[in-house]
Image (cartoon, rainbow, N blue to C red; front, side):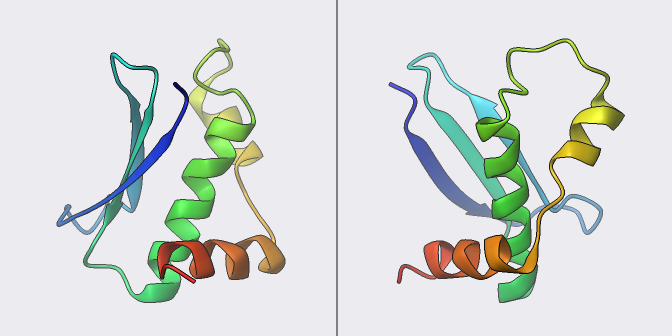
Length: 86
């Protein structure tokens, strides 16, 4: 299906978010509910970048994937709007 499902979850402080692809081929994006609104937006944007960049299908080192998933202010603003439901 390739849908994106956003889930807020209390995670350890060191975990901002992560994404798991399920048996329906949907992306389940888990965001740390303990983060500020801006922190949640940034974590969401970061996880969406992993999806957009195809990181679930390549064999690149994780460090390279993390470097690629960095964003800019405009992307963060849009992510904040999505996560807040606007």
